[in-house]
Structures are given as C-alpha cells and as structure tokens.
Length: 512
Ligand code: KIV
Ligand code: ZN
Image 1 (cartoon, rainbow, N blue to C red):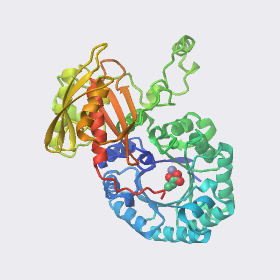
Image 2 (image 1 turned 180 degrees about the vertical axis):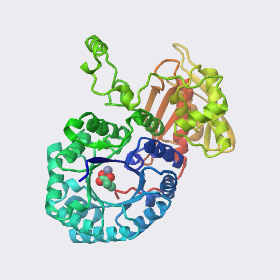
Image 3 (image 1 turned 90 degrees about the vertical axis):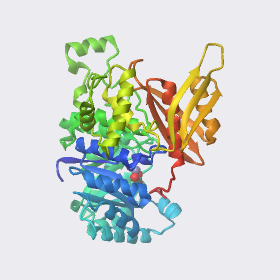
Image 4 (image 1 turned 135 degrees about the vertical axis):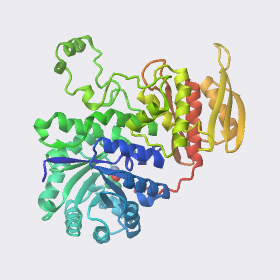
C-alpha cells in the first residue's frame, strides 16, 4: 500500500455518458490537456470500441498526453480490448480498463449469463488484455450489489491473471459510506492475492453520497485510487466529484494522511471548461467550484473573515484557482497576445487558419465588450455555431422586436448546408420567436427539455451563455451558445444542438 492517492478522472468516459454531454474529439482533447495540467494520474479518455469517433478521441489523447496515464474502457471481450489497445498504441503510459457485471441482477437480467460464465469471461478478458498491455484495470460492474463470495472468487482470479488495479463500482449509487468502506476492507482481507493490486473506488451519486462513499472506501477500505469526474459530471445524479474528493483529502490531511498529486490551482479552470463544453451548468452552491463557494454573504461571516480568514474559511479560494476576474485581453490586443493566451489556456488550434478564425471572432467580441476574460475566450472557441462550413447549421444574423403589450417578432438569417435561410416568426418572448423562426424552416420536431442562461463573467456587461437541451427519438443533445446578446446566444445554442442531432450517433453504451 502506498501513501499516495491515485486520482483517476473519468469525465471523458463516464461523465460523457450523461445524456447530452457527448463531446467532439477536439473538445475531449482540450479537456484532456487541462486534466494533464491538473496532474491527474489517470485520464479515462473514452470507450474506444463504442464508436469510430470515440476511438479517434482516445487515440488523439493517447498521442498528445505525456504526463498522465491514458486509459480506455473495454467490455470483457477480445474485440473491445483489442480496439482499446489499438487506440492506446501511441500512449507514453496506457491502461486498458475492462469490466463485466457481477451482481446477480445484472448477470441474470442484463447479461443472461451464469456466474460461472461471467467468472470465465472475466479471467479470459484480463488474460487477453495483459498480453497487450502491462497496466490492466478490472471492474466488476455493480460490484457493490454482488455476492461477496462470488466477487472474491472473480477478483482473486483476475489478479492472478495480471490485473494491476481492481476497481469496485457502486454503479447505481446504493452504498452508504461505512458499509461501502467495510465492503472494500473485507474484499482486501479475504482475497489472498489482494496485495498484488491497487484497490480503487468508483461511486455514483444517486443518494448524494458518492464523495462520502469514495472517502470511506479510502479511509476504511484502504483503497488507493479514486475514480471521479470534474463537477461530478455523469449519468443520472453523476459521479464522485474530483474537486470535492481532492480538496477533502488535502484539507483533512491530518485525518487521511495521504498525498495527492493534483495541482489544485487549475481546478476552477477545469470546472469551467467542462461546464462550458457540455452545457452542464455548475450550481452556485456547489462545493469548491460553485460561484458562492467562497462568498461570505452574511455580515457576521464577512467581519470574521476580514479579521482572520480561517474563522470561516477552511480552504483558500486562490488555491483552487479562484482569482478576481482578470481582464486578460482587450480591443487593442494583437494576434500574438491572443495566440499566447490560447496556449496558456491549453487550447491548441489545429491550423493557423483556425487561429485566424478565432482571432476574428475575438476582435468582433472586443468591439462589443471592452473587457475580455478567460471565460470569454473559452466560450468563443467552444462556439462553432458561427463558423460557416464547419457545421451544417451556422448563425449569421438576427433582429427582433419586442415591446410591452405586443407579441415579439424575430427575423433570423442562418446557413443550412449551402443555403442561406431567412426566417421569421413571433413568439411569447424574443427568444421563443427566434427559435420558432429557426424551427419553422428546420422542422426538427425535437422537444426542448432544458433552456438555461448563465452570465459568463458575472455582470450585465458579460456574455450570456445559453444551454439548450433537445430530445429527438430518445436521443438527447446539448447545444451551447455565447454572445453579449442573450437572444443571439439562444439562437446559436439552438443551432448547435440541431447540428448535434444531425450528426450520426453510432455509439454503443458500455452498459448494454
Ligand atoms: O459505474 C460503473 O459500473 C462503471 C463501470 C463501467 C466501471 O462505470
Ligand atoms: Zn460508472
């Protein structure tokens, strides 16, 4: 057992499984670079066999990332494992993470396999993976609801086959901290070769206890790897949140006595990048990364903090990357300063033409907004709704009329493929009118399941960032758009969601 806690980030795999959170290869690569900057030990980059897109994303991340181990998920079959190994070929350090369900419910109802068949398949998968890579992680899916004797048998066998990390998922978020901690402790105690592997925890947040369960798995169970995601992103109620688990272990080092390699100053930037890319807004009262996490509203608290900061603060805002909103660039900033800032933010453009395009958008924004913050730059590069030719739909212009007592109207111009479309509609409000105008031409029939507006940098001068979530034939996509004019931001977000609906979805979910 080491006294280092390994941080395994699965934002790009388990986080991305959250409906609507799917990311492009470029977006994943950008987030992977930020995770590397954070010094995450292991980045689970995707599930290579799930689609060609995910294969390419894992491959690009494996080729680009040098300081973190890059991992691909694979079901326990030769095809998935070979595909993961192929995607990881260029990795400085690569890991194959293979899994199969072991709970009675999952084996009988989902896999329709007997326990003996699952046992054999798990062993065979790890043996096959171990011939391709040295670093192999095995997860018994729904492990926490599995029979202890059966789980011990499977885990002992896969360790004997060469699994180097054993991860015990609470797949459905059913665990209670003390019980989960004891569960891990018992497994380690009962399995004779348990000391040959690193033990890992993977908790979902359905009862709001993913972080508490993970910490109990570490403290009571002796696990030395935590699987987590930025902002706790993930299906349903999400995964264990990286920022919370890391800050808990750092802040309470007196209790946990563990080292964590994370460079916490990059936490807030990572949180913003994930939120802006996926459109999953961070709640203001979210621990560590919420806008209010370090705001002391009450007079008594403010007085205390001014006299001695540790009266009410257990962490320093600057240690997790909160800085007073810094004006980073302005109207007079040149292309080189812009390019340098992109690099500092971990944004790598594929060509000079792309830098030029982003710089043009930056200049347009700087003409309308005197102070440009990092958040503005991040929003600007994630917004592809104005780049003609890159996506099927792109925004051109909008005018709208709204007056008290009158029904608002909007005229919008956008590109659909090669055609420039002009559309007009009225609606309950100017946003409704604008989106109806787009829909009157596109006829997607998609249902809007979420619409939210967020001020990127806090004031009315700020850009509005809009998230639109659309559902069509069971598929859910998020579109994000940013602009100082929130009606334009809404139209961009809507077009961006329509682009995602237009792109084919050939992805297989790992849990089927
Ligand atoms: O929650 C889960 O069981 C998983 C496994 C695939 C590791 O994400
Ligand atoms: Zn999971």
